[in-house]
Length: 266
Ligand SMILES: Nc1ncnc2c1ncn2[C@@H]1O[C@H](COP(=O)(O)OP(=O)(O)O)[C@@H](O)[C@H]1O
Ligand SMILES: [Mg+2]
Image 1 (tube, rainbow, N blue to C red):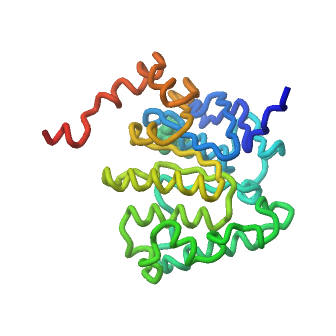
Image 2: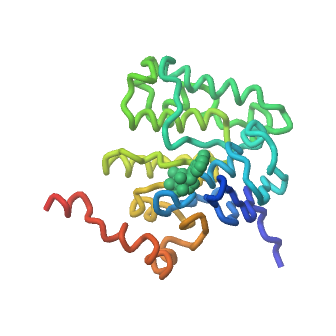
Image 3: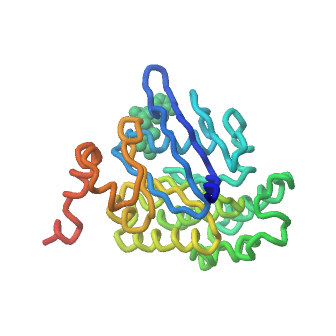
């Protein structure tokens, strides 16, 4: 019998309470190296709170987090970052007054300060060349032409790309994306999905992607986790999840029946 591969991140029974509200209710999920996993669920389902808990932004009320077998629960956010976790925020957090290039340089500086024993890519020489300079990262995310603009001057969709670039500059093993396609046009959403796949493929990342544009997400991920009222109600391939009765009842029934932009315009 071959041993089971070790998950990159193993979240066990993660619970987050805010006073009397249980925002995340004993959610367990394992993320394998190189996986592209989606997280969907209605507004208020606990998606962002789950991300906050697994990226160290919020301390879980209870539960256990293991990154490649090493316990992360209870550690500070810097330890999460140092172990290779990077995330974007639902509302992009870029430095508006700084040049696009310097926003990326900031992330790189952070990566440079990472204690050696925590560098997942090993020595500096093993960092993929594309993650070594602001210019190469901007090329990767398609923002080379905007390098010398202040971040405040670029479009909202470019802000989202910039935030992904800042996360990549920390040279993560695992990238958590919180609604990076929100507010984008249909074409931009598709381009974003292509970029996410390319990042996973070329940088060998584990990517977890929360998105409201469910139909696009389901076309691109290999696995999808469905949250509803803080609980995980499904975890499987997109084909399995769209046939799941509880998921249809709680969520997809409405989402899938929403007219597409073309249908609405017809
Ligand atoms: N800091 C907080 N304090 C109190 N309640 C919160 C906080 N953050 C989120 N919540 C609540 O937790 C629930 C889950 O929110 P959230 O994780 O943002 O959902 P989602 O991202 O799926 O839309 C919601 O009911 C929300 O109002
Ligand atoms: Mg959210």
